[in-house]
Amino acid sequence: MTTPKPYTRLASSLDQFTRELDKSPLTIQAYRTDIQQFLTWLAEHDVTVTKAHQVKRSHINEYLRYLANNGRTGTTRARKLVSLQQFFTHLVKEDVLPHSPAATVDRPRKERKPKQYLRPDEYTRLLAAAGGYLRDFALLQLFLQTGIRVSEAVAIRVYELDMEHKTLTIHGKGSKERVIPLEKKALQALKSYLSVRPKTTDQHLFLNYQGKGLSIRGVRKIVEKYVKLSGITKKISCHGLRHTCATNRAALGMNAFCLKTLLGHERITTSQEYVHIGTEELRKPMEVTSL
Image (cartoon, rainbow, N blue to C red; front, side, top):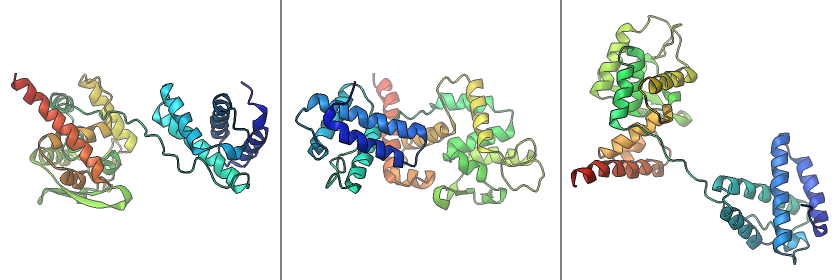
């Protein structure tokens, strides 16, 4: 649909805006499409708007509601709002507008995908599938008991494992260090692995077949392998094992503060999400047994 004539000036501004964008061709085209779609919608829904300064905050909010009513996700609406904010900021810089009508518009919430995690029977099958491979079993046991990130797992050095004090030093996001306790099953699995770990100058705890530290990609392939071997149909990644640890810890009564410390979350609100999920998981068997 052709944009009406009153937007000739805006169309010209759009051309200038996209020319000055230091982005990839695909990103520039996405910006252009988003803005053109808004201008077309505006022309169809408010014929009184003929100049840029007549575009109001209410128009943009109404446009976002229109998109929501037509099934556009929060992620899509948020992206389109960013395009409009960038465009109107450009018009302010060019003295076309005194201020941006999009500046104070609330960004739509992005839908969160439900966290994938394993039930106790599922992660028991996962561990059983790796039972004959001491390195892989220890790695999976560590994921499930501590909830460490895959990047943290590949970075562990042998000397950061303290068998005497039953702790493991982890270097997390932002170079933040935390010391986490190890339980009996993880300790035993690590002890068994260390008894067969190749002798090498490489100090990484988990080694590949060449005697070098495992890569993130290598660990992901290991997890994928045993998820498949155990017949689990859920899309479980290394991060899914982290979710499994957090959910089961919460179901067993660990509070948000302790979860934050264990998992190295930056915000306690992230930990609180697991407390909610864990409570729901605990309620299921209670409801069954109460029948």
